[in-house]
Image (cartoon, rainbow, N blue to C red; front, side):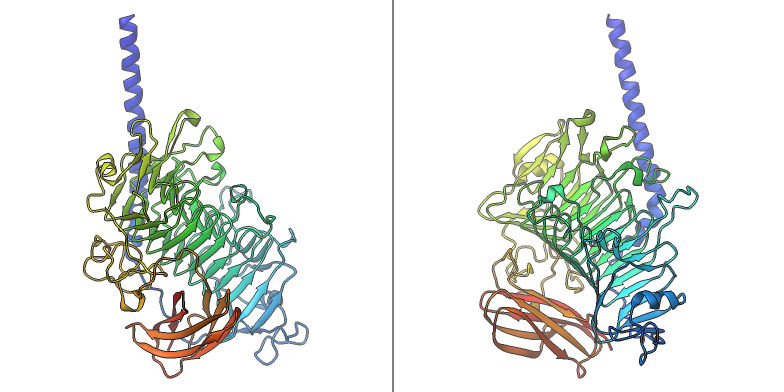
Length: 595
């Protein structure tokens, strides 16, 4: 019997060592495979400012004519469809201001096509959500690489407003490519049947910049539980090099942004995400195994080398930032406020079940880095700051392998003590405080628990303990407002600046909706304010140095939508801030004046 037990013990340890070697080998192969691409994520960059004039090849107008028009400025076409039919590769199609109702999908099939509003005008393209034959309002097909959408409002689509198509499931295993190298810039994308933007497998190098994305999931009946819905702001399934930059994503029925299914090298930076029925930004999630490319990702990692930096995330029912089967995720200088209201935690290590398919590997998160993050939770949020999930299903699954690299983070729950939990059987801790959490993960040496002292826009006040208490590192150069960080970094998405440090207590619900269009602009822009009630307000413009440039209005306004034009012909190009201030609020946005 003893000999038999000894033999079993030897077999067990040989099997265990073999399994550990297999996992170590595959992790190192994966790391070596992707090392050449990691450097592209190191440097945070500001968007290029293209001052060259754009020359249109074709014009479209709500008052044009497809039969008698020539596509010229004086004789424009009526429909985008007709312009696309006659356009050659590389054409710029300008849409005069107004609304374009579409009753069939706008399919872009030729390379390097640009759709954009006429300068200083605003074109709206709207599709119904109740017609399954009109799946997407604008649909980029394989072969339309290099396309651009600029300064457009895109509404509706039964499934998506903007979709990027792939040949992944077209039946030819030799060609599973997707459309790539597409730019969506300065657009409003909203009120869609399901997801607002859909990026499919192998649709690589999709850049979404300075866009407002909101109101997904209109095809779900009012009152639908978000846990029974699927309608993201941006849904990326195994697309590489996605860049989401300087966007505003809000009022999303499920997740604000997720990048999953083996998505690689994706970056979300300087983006505000708020009012989400599930999570804010998800680095990985839970994807059907059919969408993974196991030739380069044999372990079924949901996300590989994803980066989230300088983002503001607020008002989510579940995780502010979630990591699911993520390989080397990097989470730097984010501010999270009132997140994980009913479940998960502010920073969450989740589990991917992969449809319970036997061959899927369902790996834990590996080597996550979380530095300089600020988490502010109100009194009534019942969830931890950090959770590592465990489930006994499928033989036992864990959300994290080893310890995370965490430090220089600020935690605060108003009126309570911040707490953390790890559900892994070998590492289990429940409701432990920060000192105990430090010992548990052997990290967080410089992290602290204190009121971060932030204003209504989640920027630091001059008395904030987060100022100069972060760690300098290569992955972050700027802050949420595109200010270059100085000296020792501040903790969170904001680097203290006099224009953003006006004293207000944090307010979870923003009392107004504020935006401007076009943005960037070259002579004038429209600033739109949506007030929920009658209010005395001021609208002011500041330059990048915090100097007051102009007071646009100072008066009492009724509730509802108000639009004001700011003419900027006499001012130099650059970044400007505009603020709307009332008796109980102050909201600031940034805009870019081109010269």
